[in-house]
Amino acid sequence: MRRIVCLRYLAAGVVPSLIALACSSAKPGPVPSEMHDAATFGVPSAPAIPSTTQVALAPRGHVSPPGPMALIKGGVFKMGANAFGFDDADYLGPAHAVKVASFRMDITEVTVAAYRACVETGPCTTPVDTHPGREPYPLRCPWTFQNVDDYPISCVTWSQADAYCGWAKKMLPTEEMWEYAARGEAGRDFPWGWTVHGNDWGRPDDLDERIYGKNSCHARSLVFTPDDPKAWKDTCQVGGAPKGATPEGLLDMAGNVSEWTSTFSCSYKEPNCKTTLRAVRGYWASAARMNQSVYRLAREPDDFDIHVGFRCAQRVDEAKAP
Image (cartoon, rainbow, N blue to C red; front, side, top):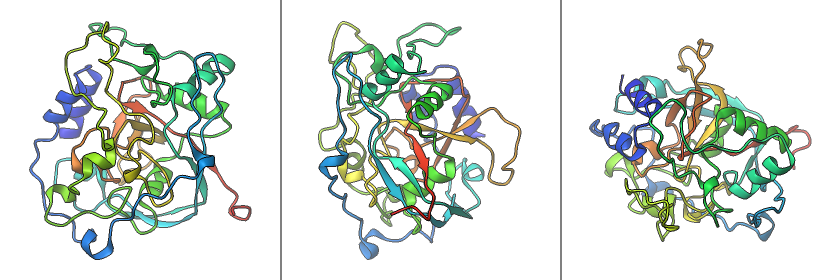
């Protein structure tokens, strides 16, 4: 029920920071027994990103190529969670085995510069800054600001995200691809590693550093002053929190923006349900439970928000995968 209420808040245009407060009142439950202790298994350190995979930034008017990708070797993993301890448990479970073929995933979320290249030379359309039919208020979308080429593009609909990935000769990842990329065959609780027993929702003490970086670029202010160029701080530069990388090198799988997937948002118990909602993965706020990689959201495909962006994937013929 809480998930439905939260989705209604989103659909109504309620300020996201207030939604986070309204939707986080459930009391933490016990950490599931299948989650491993970081003290026992260790938290994988973020791999160094080779110079060939650095994000290429582009000034306005310059065509920026689609970003670099990491190879994710196929395997079998348990998707979802059996016991999560709050109202969305039915939507997050049950845990079930899923086989995933090898694929490639964008190392970072698609940037403003990369999306602009698609607008200038391809099928992409310009993001808008207000929701039609609602009380108009600026969403602080990065497209409307200067000097944010290396920030994730957001305020894009599902169709806009899908069009970009098609232009880049890629695809929006399925929900299975996304969760497998975030968790790996071992089933990591967070993209970077395991939960910490005894902490709130397994939250590591340095969670904010792992999702925002050492110098947090988030300013959760409800006051928007369009004349102040420093007012826009709702998201972070892509790759700004390298400590939060997956062992495979994917950045910002937790924090920064949530990400569209290609999958219709059905319960795992009813995977072929009739719905228009699309699954959204990766949560932008610092609520520990929502940064665990099993967490799911759902949005109407024509919705858009400052906190929703995307990254792309590519299927790989396993016989040809290096």
